[in-house]
Image (cartoon, rainbow, N blue to C red; front, side):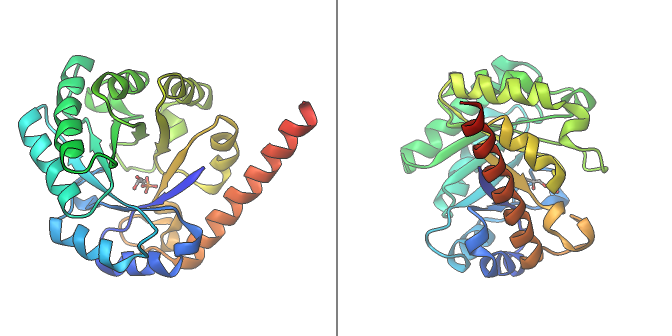
Length: 251
Ligand SMILES: O=C[C@H](O)COP(=O)(O)O
């Protein structure tokens, strides 16, 4: 499982760089503009320059409206600025058809510029609170639009968490559907270390985190702490070892 960490500024990205050996993807966002709020192109560029070259930079395009042209152009801005994972939060899409239309534009805009970049179609575990597409529709949306990954995060950061809205067995269905479609499965939403056992067992490919690695567990007031990133990774590694041992013992 890959660890994606979301700093909100160049300063925090530098703290991530101190813990670079413990993380896999640096994800640029602007939390004060929403759960998947988009940051400025120059911030993406500066963060790309600040983190080691072998660490991919991801950028969120925003909690986007159903405006395929607008979103495609924003996605191009993110990839031109140096991101190689382009995440789109399908906030304003109320049907899978709308979401596919938005994502098709994003895939074309991104891949025309950088074919190897990965496009992530993100929905929300708490979709029922905001009226957007159902979480389990995301793998189909990603697949039908030519994206590379399906993701879930939470839209409303009020302390409720991924498993509060999408229980572990439904997250397992999400991962299975993504894998059956040849996609990566990414999960986030105030994930904490005790969730890592389940996320590992169900085969999650990418776990996205911010609050759990911020001072005081506070994704808004706290700053990312390199030692918390290291501790989170240590727990991921421990869960991976336990899971591998259980699989071996069962075979
Ligand atoms: O993409 C990951 C998100 O930034 C997760 O943030 P969070 O762990 O604070 O919910």
